[in-house]
Image (cartoon, rainbow, N blue to C red; front, side, top):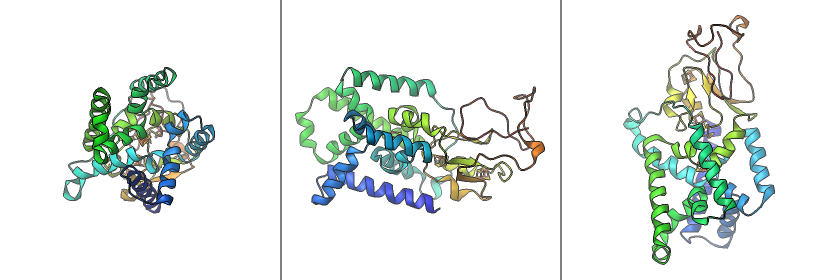
Length: 293
Ligand code: SF4
Ligand code: SF4
Ligand code: SF4
């Protein structure tokens, strides 16, 4: 609960400062803070050859997972806000999320396109694929429409269509853009898959109520196999307070079933039948070990 609260406070501050800056609201100190925050955005830092900033984010991701995506990225926060709208109050059940398999080939393809655009210095493509660049475009649409009139029509249309698509995807399915298109999310996901701290399901305690899966905006909780895909988890911590049995946690431990007889062994029948607690093995790249036979 505390982790989730801290995450919300940090993301609201970062989002407020960056949005205020785009709207030209705030004093000198605010402006400096906003410039610093914009400078530490992952792709901005990479494009500016600020290797120390990039390295810091990579190390933080290796330790804590994708906290970048749940704290300082304004495009992540606005997706959360938009995703929340159809899930307020009584409509929460109707807007429940469910697990979906990772679109790894698509993610990799978008990352390659981004790297190619950077090497060929195609700025229009870089802007559209840079989460902060895209957010800046939205700010221009909202706060400085006069600048739009002076810009290239094609660039405006492409950015507008992409931004609209991101928001529609967020409204319907939460962090779909983050886990299928965003090159920063894909890069950090490669590392967060092996992060020290991660979301872990204790299969001894899990009663398969499905509540954690229903609130997971990243659609990365696979209750069939009792695993969380660490490459897609955006560390929002929304799944922790809803668990009725404290079975899901943010921890450095990789859970092992309490009963040694239920621990994973090489099983020639693997994949053919459900385990004793209803879980099946998986071949997917995941963070924590699947339930065993
Ligand atoms: S995946 Fe991309 S858009 Fe989503 S929060 Fe992370 S950096 Fe931002
Ligand atoms: S598993 Fe899903 S709900 Fe839980 S922290 Fe990760 S993204 Fe959020
Ligand atoms: S909310 Fe807890 S008990 Fe329910 S499925 Fe998720 S981990 Fe298991």
